[in-house]
Length: 504
Image (cartoon, rainbow, N blue to C red; front, side):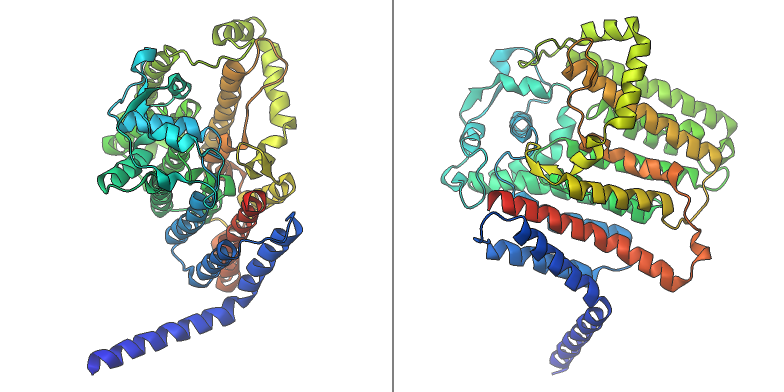
């Protein structure tokens, strides 16, 4: 009897909570529904609307809006998980950039191959890849992956070599998903989607932890990490998921370090930061330059003066790891070298024409607007909306510049963030110039907006000029926090309509 009364009371409390949240947030709920319907109908070529998928997307969005709380790391995880699951199942087979190659490498890793070889005869994966690849581009209603089960037979595939720049470390989450599916003796359908889901779960958990440990810029982290292209990529086999998550974690730990009291940073903290940056070498090499941030932390934050000097040694360690890895992956010859492309030849050109190279990088930096707007291109960059991408760019820029700040950053930290961000940007451009662009070309080929997602929070450190939190009343500050939590949901919902309109 008492138990029954208790349950009734809990139900009543829950319904009362939902009612109050609806009264408080009905405008945000209505805006989400209207935006979804407008973009779904206006951009749709036919009226055959997938009712179940639309209803699911709206229900998840409404639940998110009603139940978002004050703990930013939990909000971020919920947003990433809900929309990531939508993308995981609705994105057609291998319909994210290079997903087929990344699944190929995942199966190679699951087979116990931790190091990529240059011997073609040893590049073998299970026949599962061929069976899934036969459904390339088909959505959940069209593909028949359920008809296949795990096949132990091995087949050769030299296209594994296109993943030569990445270590097996980047494929651990996806591999865990595949292994779980095999252990449970599931059909290939669930094995395939489990790989996507565990990769998504990894991204969500790392982002949530990064937001939890950073003492400031928590909402900036949420906005940057839930940018549609990041959640979309996190819902696939792409190894960029690992590098994006790791990048956010490194920046969060850096912010945690420079916000420490005096005499608090010791060998343990330096070692952790060095390890994280060293891991980046195996997944997205230009981002190892994040190690340079450590020298901009004030010397008095370290327990001893000698520890500050040790931080310079950490740069040497990461540089050595990067060089060793660069030599390792450069020894693997990819099967699809583009006409006119030569890393050695491009390096010789850069050293012979340094001024032209500097001018080229400068032109890309100042004039290549398709980099940020390409963050709203999905599939194999085959569909999307550059207009919505431009709107998101304005929102993101306003967020980074004017969002209320918890603390004023010292000048060295701000300039350090600027210099390292610029160095990473240049390094990414140069890497694409050397590996994807013909020798001596006056343009850079292959640059995509998703490569720069990891820089968004770092840029906020030196760009932010917003008011201090204590300069705003609690009501105004709460409105700011609600807006920057809900607007990413709106953009993700709009992005989901693009996928529905393209494939359903």
